[in-house]
Every structure is written in C-alpha cells, then in structure tokens.
Image 1 (cartoon, rainbow, N blue to C red):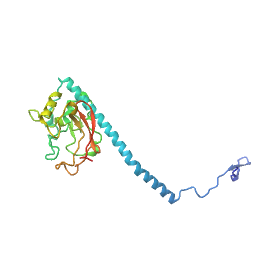
Image 2: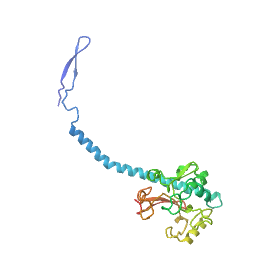
Image 3: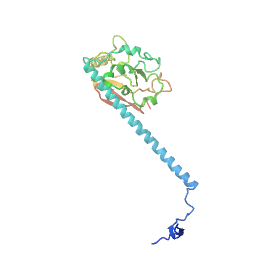
Image 4: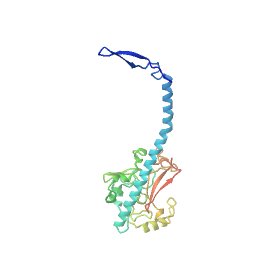
Length: 252
C-alpha cells in the first residue's frame, strides 16, 4: 500500500526547482484540556501508590544501616574488653559530667539514663567514627528529645546502653561498669528484674538498643508516647555481638 505525501515546489538559488515533502498539519498537535487532566490524574494515582513503597524501602535501608552500626559497636566493646583484662569500661565519671548531666528529663521516662555519650570517648580507639553511635533515623524521629541524644568527644550518641545507665557506687547488679561478662551475667541473674528477665547466657543480655517510648508508660510525654526510631520495633545488640530485631506492639 502506498501513502501519498503532499509536496510543494521549492525554488533553489540556481533558479531550478525541487520538491520537498511537507507534512500537513492536522489540528491535533497539542493535548486537549481533558487529556492533560487524565495524564495528571494517572500521575497522581501512581504517586499515591509508589511514595509509600519508596518511603518503606528507605526506612528499611536505614534499619539495615542501624543494624550494621550496632554490630560495629559490639565489635568495639569486644576489642576493648580484650585489651582491658576482659572487663568493661568504668566511666561513671563521664556518666555524671557530660553535657546535660545525668537524667535531665526527671521525672519522665526512662527512670535511669541509658544515653551512651560516654562510649564515644571510651571506645574511640576502636570505633574511629562517632557516627556509628547513632541510628540514621533518630534525628528525624526525635529532634530535640533530651532522652535520646548526648554530645561527647566531638560526636553525638543516639543509642541507649541499658547496662551502663547508672553511676552508683558500688556498681548496681544490673550495670556492667568494670565487670567481666560472667560477673554481669551473675549480677543480672541475682537482680532477677522482671523488666530484664532472667538471662541464661551473655547471648541474652542486651547491650545497646534504639531509643523507644512505650505507650504503656504513664510518665512518657504525650508528644513521644508510642514512638520508636523504627516502625513497630527496634534493633538490639546483645553481649555476644549478635543483633536482632524485636517487634514491639507498645510502639507504632
């Protein structure tokens, strides 16, 4: 089948004529208003579908980075303990003297101060990077919340270290200051705190965790009640170095 293309004569500089195909306009070179509205509606529907997927993928990536940070913290603790006669650091002096002092949020939750600013200083020879002391999602989730951030040694710590949350003398049963793994395990078993549980081994002892504020605690401020760094749970580092995700229905 052949298609006929209209042509017109074109005068050349030499006085000769030649022909060149010229497409005819059909009047359909632009979108109509209805077509534009349909395209915009389709884009809006696709955006509504895809944006939550992208947000979920981004948060999953941050959760993975968080788990990697915690593993590095676990390695730093292991190296420290190996260099110091199998004992954890005892920096209760930093616990009291760092900016903000001890537990500046009295009487709100938590009842002790698990912030880990002291660890930036104590573990610096092993971490070389203070950024691993905090999950990348914390800054957006808890901006300005005193219980979450602590500045020390040129960095900001944003993980909680529950086994280093007090500075009493003698060291409380559930704190690790200056203790060996076995001494901490025995102390936690002797304390038999129902909030901690009865650990059977060092693999059951939580060392570091993302900040979280259970909705079941009456003293948690309304603005942060039920909030966690990651949706629906948190990453936890255990004393044997493994990291595990815990789903927590008390957070959203």
